[in-house]
Image (cartoon, rainbow, N blue to C red):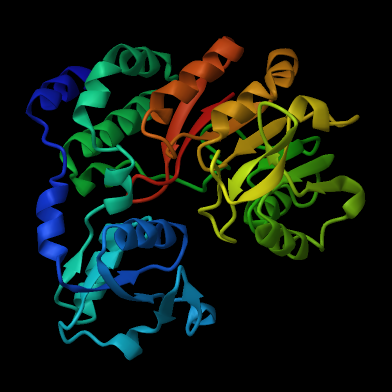
Length: 358
């Protein structure tokens, strides 16, 4: 598979942003999806001077609110007469594209603007890192992981969304084909967001576990997190309004109150950051999940002793930065060479790729 991909690199053309700009110039634009992807896309488009008129979203609770100064409306308020060009800003653009077509919308685009702007479709960058790509591929433990890894790279070289068709599997963070959870687990949720993964963990274990540590730096997200897990015995749960990082202290942060919040040197906010090696008490983690918007490598640095000495199961997001797909598996292997590495993917788009280390 890698030989085929390497031949594609020579022919690959990065998505033509200038051509896309010309198509959207002077158009009235509606962004479909008022979540993290939509928020970041709206910032990019406003900076480019696009005429973004509305968000539309399926969540009725968001209707009438404003995100990044843009009103969120329902489908019925916008209509589908062709007055607007709709840009899909959801993690699974093709599913949404077909849904909008069936609803009568005419002018629809699923151009992955956010990922293009962040360098995910840069064929030269992949070629320059080809030695690391090959090394990561060779480290993957099963054939399906190799297929997932290769198909994601193929999509990034071709922008062909059919590359995802046969690689989406199972329940994220709890892949029964890789591992199962026992009743003596100590779970660390890095990037606990709204508590969904903690709730899933509690349900899957039937509440039979030792302890849970939850970390969420965004203050608004943390409030929702605390409310969502109040049914779990607080003697077995400790929540931190801080993020996991390579050092203790405060860092710059952009807090948006959604899944798009992230660490930034120029961030308008300051949030607390914690090394996991320093945060745990008598309960030693057996399973650690990281989905922290590009700070995964820093967090892994901050739990190096735990990884080296106790070898907990790891689930690490590898889709927030273009090179994470190979850099993070290689770094995990460096921290503990006895891990078996797997890759799984969960959406028909570039979001939600996870490296499991067992």
